[in-house]
Image (cartoon, rainbow, N blue to C red; front, side, top):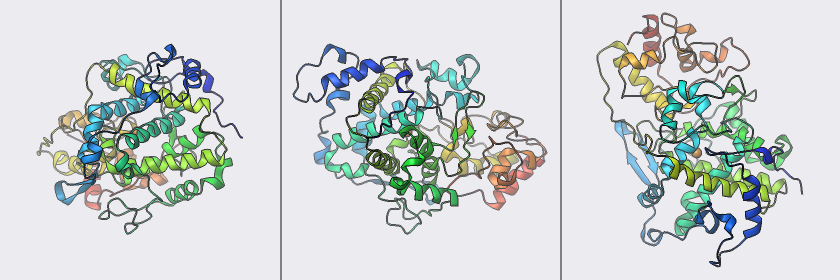
Length: 453
Ligand SMILES: [Cu+2]
């Protein structure tokens, strides 16, 4: 058997609490083993919620519910597909939407604050978490160990749902294969176009034939990081773009089916677990990872893995207990002012095409492009002359569309931009509908005219 337990395992600490208890957890996993017989747990189980050890009983609603996914109708003929109401209710009763969002946000503090090792005092995103009793996770997104935690935590959630809704467990099945085009029977939204770039097709091919690529990923953490995001953390920059442009297919999957205006927006973490496609795509990632584990000869009983499953279950639980107030869960009501050129021509386009991933509650790259709760002045102040995460270009340079990263990304000209190795040239949005030529022209004109609110 090849051991793929990451070598850093013993030194790690995870979550919002410095547990330092890895060895303790490991010991207790080994000590308690299978104790489904209702016997008393050893004292070392203290602090670990019962359900992390014994699991959950099926929910009574599993027997009575129809279990059909809900197709919801949104503005302008858009549609999204959500889990049955009973499942969403169960997750709400257990605080999952909040915990899942917080789980990601405590790992995204460096990204939200645009610097590595972000301190609470100087960054609003960090402050809003610490005001709720949460703090920066010691392992941030894209750091060694984060990919492994990511796949284990999502597996924990998948397993619980299959246990709680056994008669409807197919709701949580991953894609058999990634839909390649709109007509593919696996497309969860037959009304929506499916398009992948050459790099994304390369990722699909590699991951769907993971058994042939085992040697390209030294550890499970390497594989998971490759799937998760197209960037990684470094001490100088929390978002260094990966050299391999096929990395980050998980983000592309979220983007592909993220429907603007949906109450279960797939592109951000606030309520994306309510979305059926969330489980399709995470189920698929889970299957790819499992096939890697099998091909690499990793046993289910491997202690490091078992300890991590327990630790992730406990962390989710602790996030629910530790947060003193609920975070921003529901998207704010739309109160779009309509006066200036920016309000009329630019802001709606950004909201329509970018909010799938840059909505204010949990924006990718810490960049907010949809926030109806702030004035145009405040909104523009966050863009004009503010550096992008690549650290080279400003998001908007008043008067200069060709030097404004927002415009270059939206127009796709970023692909030819001259910028350093850490610069993510990928056009935006990464999947789904691009800005129309009229919207791009309006964006360019607005910048050329001085980027006024
Ligand atoms: Cu997640």
